[in-house]
Each structure stands twice: as structure tokens, then as C-alpha cells.
Image (cartoon, rainbow, N blue to C red; front, side, top):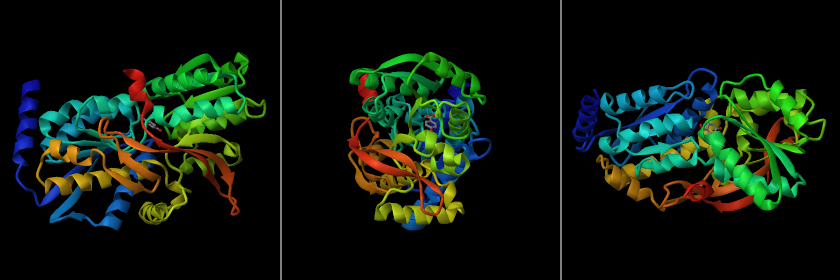
Length: 390
Ligand code: PHB
């Protein structure tokens, strides 16, 4: 079976080695189920990019083919990536909301001669799994490291960490502990929760009982983050003065209407706020709002996808439409541009995006809506997670 699959991959790599009129791009993400809004944001970012930049690169028409993996499911992700390569003949893979889904598809890339552009998945290690992975989102180490210092500067000394029990959660736990202890604080308890956790009351009780003066949390954006922030309020932790520290996954813009007052004042660190004040972001938000249909649904996966398309267009340009993963990836090493999030570049060594990380605070606008207001920038951050693991 394994050999048969390998033969099919090789055949796919060779059959589309000729110049193609249509370049197919396969996007794997959650397009149904509880995380469907995150996948909808992938699509909004891709559609916005193509609305602004056209659907052609040179003479080549770009066609996007979507495949749905509703929850983190590495086996399904790998099977769909394989199907996209072998049956659909895609020259590029992209998307990947969850780390395990991205990880699972990396063994296919080299043999199939296909680059992968990760548009969300954020465990540091993904880029080390294949030389054909490029990432345009963020890593958990990148967004969390500045938060550890912010927490100490805010007066917190004893913090409980709470994370989803999978690779990005483990990265978050390690990144916060490293930064917070270096600053002089201590992590008094480390709690890990199954990804499927929906009732956060027991964990809130444990945090209260721990005597900590703050909590740090990372969960994948979607129903878990909405549930956690609600529970933080409803279980009286906010009222008790237990400080809240988290990366921006916990206060994504699309959750803010449902969170309302309970999110007000929460500070998070992240690579993108929908409110970012720049001409590039205004153009992006206008185009993405139009395609998503409701501006309040816009969130960070859209910008990862938008910039991911920029990278794929540059790869198609550099290869003249020919399937050559090594040349394609080589062409974007060191690439820099102005993203809707601010200035970015692809680090030539790690193939991960270098970007500003912003400290933001959930703020009420004059019209009564809530938004993440940028209050400080940590400029040109690489991924500290790769160095930490060496
Ligand atoms: C991931 O699985 O890598 C992931 C998912 C959702 C997030 C961040 C990271 O908000």
C-alpha cells in the first residue's frame, strides 16, 4: 500500500511537470463544524487576495480547491492532501488551521514536489518537518513570548498556565514559563485540558484555589476560546482580580460580539488586529468584508491566508508555472512585503514569517462595538521557539 501511494505521488509530480495553463492550489481547513468560521476566514483571505490581485499569474489561471477537515484530524488531513495531489493534480498545498493536520501532510511534500504554505497552524516544529514548508501565520512562541514580560510588568508574580493538550498548547506553556521566569515570576501550576473540553468551571475552581494572582491561557480560537473567556467572568475570577494573560487567539474579533462586556479590558499579544491602522489593512478589510458578507466575522486566519496567497503567487511567478518546489520555496526565502498586519518577511533559514507582535486591549468603540486596540508593538519578531528547541 505504501509503495503504491509513493508511486502515485511520483507520477503526480511528473505528470504536472510540464507547463500548466491552470495552476491548482489545494486548501485544507475546517469548513464545517464548530470551527467553520475559521475556515470561512481562510476563504475570505484567499478571495480578497484574488479580488485585489487578479486570478492570473502571467498566463496561468489560479484555481483553488478546498477540502474540509472539521476538527484536528491528522489522518483525514493526510488523506485529503494526498487526494489533492494525486487526483486533482494540485501544485501547491495551503491552509491548515490545526498543527496536527499540517504535520501529518508534511511527509508527502518532497516526493510529490509540492510546497506547503501554512496559513494558520502555529506549533514551531512544523517548518522543521520538510524543507518545502513556508508559514505566513505566526507561532505560539512568537505571540506568547512578549506576553510573559507584559504579565510580569503588570505586577503578576504567581501564575497558573492553562493550555489545550496538544503541540501548540505545549509550546504556549513552555514559552510563557520561559519568559515569565526569566522576568522573575513563577509558574505555580501547569494545567492541560483535552481539546474537546467544553465545561471550564472545574478548571476555574482550581485556578481560584491555587492562590495565583494571574492565569495564562492558550486554546485554539473558536468555541473553546469563547467558552473560556465567558467562564473566567461567570466563575468570578475577573471580579476576584485574578489577572488574565493570553495570546490574541483568546479575543479574536469574531468572538467579541458574543463576549461583549466580559472581554472588555482584556490584554493579549498577537500578530494581527482587524483594527490595524494602515492603508494596506483598510484595503484588505474592505475586500475581505465584501467576500465574507459580514465584517464582524473577520478574524486572523483571513490575514494568514491573504499573505499565504501572496507567497504562492510569488512562487508561481518565479517558476513560470512549472512544478518545481525547490525553486518555488527558494524564491520566497527572504521575501519581504507590507502585509495588512504591518511589515513582514520570510526568514530564509526557518521559512517562517518575521512580523510585529502587538499588545492590544479589548476596547469599546463609540458605536458600542468591541475591538482589539493596538497599544504597543514588539517589532520584527522571529520565532523564538525554534531556537528554544535546538
Ligand atoms: C494550531 O493548531 O496550530 C492552532 C489552532 C488555532 C489557533 C492557534 C493555533 O488559534
